Length: 307
Ligand code: SIN
Image (cartoon, rainbow, N blue to C red):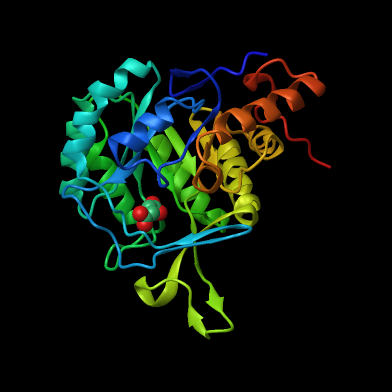
C-alpha cells in the first residue's frame, strides 16, 4: 500500500505527521519526531524572541483530549533556523511554524525561513492563547494585510494554520484570500477557545487568561472535518490541505482523507501516547484503505459521499 502524499508539491512518505504544538520545541524533541514514523518534522510555532510561555498550570490532560494555554513557549525563530541543517540528515520534509505579533514579525520570519533549509512554512494565524494577540484568522482585513506582506518573499511553499470557522461567509472570505495570494496549503484546525471548570474546587483548571484556553481531542474532530471539507470544495482541490483535530485512530485519519485532506497532523494523541502513535495510526489507516479497495491516499481523498 502506497501512502505517499504531497503537500504543495513536497513529497511525504506517509500522510501522518506531528502537528505544531506538543513536544516539538527543542532539538531533542524534534529528533524524537525525526526518528519516529511521522512523515515530516513539524516545529513548534516560533516567535521573534524566545518565550517562556504562560504561567503554570497551563496544560490539563483529560480522557477525551487536552486543554491548554501554553502561550507559545519557544526558543525564538533563529534557533529553529539553526536546527534545520541538523535535521536534514533524517531526510524528511521540515516544516517551520511561525507566529508573529506584528506584520514586521511575520515578514522578518518568513524572509528568514525562506532562506533556510526548511521545506515548508506554516504561518499560524490561529493561536488563541496569548493576551493581546488576537486570532488574525478571524480578522479578514488584517489577514489580507499580512498575506500581502509575506507572500512572494521566496520560493518555498507558504501555508496557513487556521482557526475553526463556523459561518459560510467566513469560509468564503478566507478561501478568497487563499486564492488571491497563492497560499500553497492550509492546516485546519487549531484548538477551539473553551473553558473547563472543576466542579469540586469550583475553579478553572488552568491558570492563564482566567482559565480560558484551547481545547483539542476527540470532540473537536467534527469541527476539523467540516473545515477541511468546506475548504476542499471552495478551493476546488487547488490547495493542499492538512487536517488536524481529534485524530487518534486510523479511522479518524481515513475520515479526514474522505473530507479532502492530503495529510493529517497529530497533536493530542502524540502528547498522550508519544512518537509510537504515528506508526500505529498509519498502519490502522492502511488496513482500512486496503479493506475498502483504495490503493493510495489520492484515491481516497475527497471521496465523501452525500446522501
Ligand atoms: C500555544 O503555545 O499556546 C499553542 C499554540 C497554538 O495554539 O497555536
